[in-house]
Image (cartoon, rainbow, N blue to C red; front, side, top):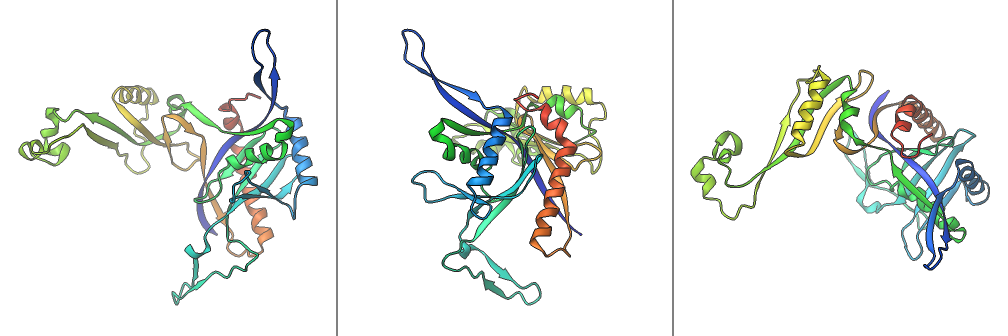
Length: 317
């Protein structure tokens, strides 16, 4: 088994219906109302049954030469599992043999494109989308554009919103272990504390020879010992963090529960993500089996964290 750590992001899919509402003595105003989940699932059924070409559909804005491809790999009453892909410049990639280090170009024919992709899982009961983050892969926002492109004549618009923790202090206070805390603080250039070599690495005369300083930004990192909890008393953690927020910015905290991997969290509007160990079976070479393996792992991780994900959704169930 090969350990591969990936980050699973959670988003909420909504489809909105636009209507014009007339009010006496004023111009008509636009009003947007969410479709019911059942209605959105009916749209999914129409797309899957009538609009796919070899299980795929192109998502493309008008007059935009670039496009994203949605491939539906598996669907049932509970989930839709697929992947989003977009074209990449094949000239920036090659294949290299591990032993000889000889490289070979990737052979792409005229009617083919070289594509980077990643996987998504849609819970049909809640329309929560689990998205496996990959560098260079398409944005999950493209899933919302799919509905906008297909149904704009019906005044329907797709929308994707990240599931996020607006105030992470209570959220982090419930974690079993708090690790390293990082934040930035800004001092005026005249602050006498900056003469200290332990702060800037400069003696006073050298520091004062620097001209036209607007301010001095310092990054503070409270580094935790490996596998140690810096705040066994979570009440003290909340107190310390609230103190840091009085003068610090860009605050990040590494934390985890006992059954999780450590992740770094922003303090405000922190996207809810889960670090996942995908222990891929290297003996599996059949692409169909590989997709099934990923599907089962994504379902397992989502179901394990479903209650927490729903707790931070703006749309309540």
